[in-house]
Image 1 (cartoon, rainbow, N blue to C red):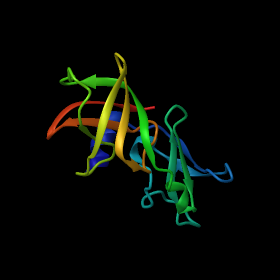
Image 2 (spheres, helix red, strand yellow):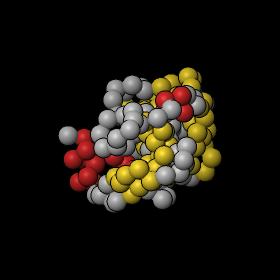
Image 3 (cartoon, rainbow, N blue to C red):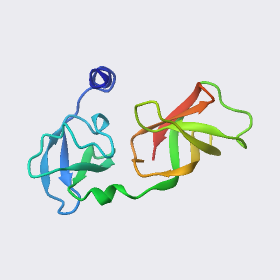
Amino acid sequence: KFSEFVKAHLGERDGSIVDIDSDKVLGKHKGFWFHTIGQRKGLGLSGGPWFVVQKDAAKNIVYVSCNESRLDRPQLNFVVGKMHWLDKPENFGRDFHVKIRHGVRTTACRLEDLSDDRMQIHLADPDGGIAPGQYAVIYDGETCIGSGVIE
C-alpha cells in the first residue's frame, strides 16, 4: 500500500484536522503527507461529507470543508522549492510534464528557473488540487528528471 510506503519513509506525526470555515478542530491525523487535496475517504470524521481543501505543512494541519466548491480554485502557476534534480535540463524554454498527485496523470508545463533550488511551474491547464507540502515531480517525456516541494 502507498500509505505504508509513505509511513516507512516519512513516519508519523500527530496533527489536527480543522474545519477551514469555523477554525474548529474536528479530529486528528498522523501526518499531513498522508492526505491529498480533494480527498474525502479515510478522514474518520462524522457530519460530512468532508473534503481536504488545504494543508499547512509547517504546522502539520489538514484543513477540511463540507463545501466542495472550495476545491474549485484552479491555479496555472506555482512555486516549487527544495528541488532535487536527477538530470537538470540545459534549456527550460520547452515543454515538460509535472505530476502533483499519485496516479498516472501528468500535466503539460513550462519551467522557469528562479534559483538553484526553486522553480516556477506554469501549467498548460489549471489544476485545483495544488497544495503546499505536496511534491511536484518533473518529467521530460517518460523520464523523471527531478522533483521538489510545492511552496
